[in-house]
Length: 158
Image (tube, rainbow, N blue to C red; front, side, top):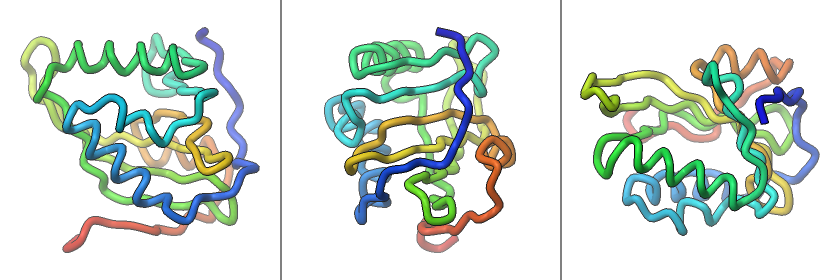
């Protein structure tokens, strides 16, 4: 499961409510509502953590992805992990969206964490079919091999 998949811009169509989907799954995560968190993801989801963690894996299919999220919730606890969306960007005219987060929380040892996190989402048939995780926006953009990013959402007041 430790294989690294090559990145390429998606071939699907970006759903018109992409910002709402991303924001609602993020809000559901903060409520620890796993069913609502999973709602925007395709059954054949591929969740790739190989670029974000030294021991990263690729989780294929909803059962593997659900188990991964359950493990993350157990590891971080009920109130110890938040992802604040900094901006949502679209890659050229593709179905790829880059979501830039600020991750706040505490590690298992109690050490506070304030870091940046990036998800690159690929959409197919209105659902997130693939996601790659990165620890910086630069690394995410570099993996895509494209220059054309357009911001489609930023928190009010920023």
